[in-house]
Image 1: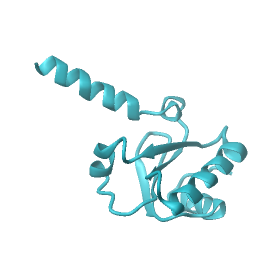
Image 2 (image 1 turned 90 degrees about the vertical axis):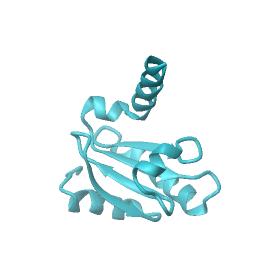
Image 3 (image 1 turned 30 degrees about the vertical axis):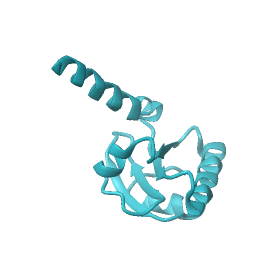
Length: 116
């Protein structure tokens, strides 16, 4: 029984790891819900980041309806919830609310992650 529990936990952890962490890229994770207008706005900003900075920074979209454990792990009360993760995989900053591309780049810089 404990082996099955371990396997399920391992799958959850592996599912949450991104290719960006394997490549040691800083990552912006957006924790959101499908019916949130501000989340939709933030996801459009992620598309911009992917097109302009895809080689320097990665993005990850986390649907909190599908990953309730992540919401609990980061004590998410409002969405969108942004996690700024450095190349080593450490969360260096957390923000709430939709941000513009310029704001996201500034927040990365404030957290000590240079993308430019």
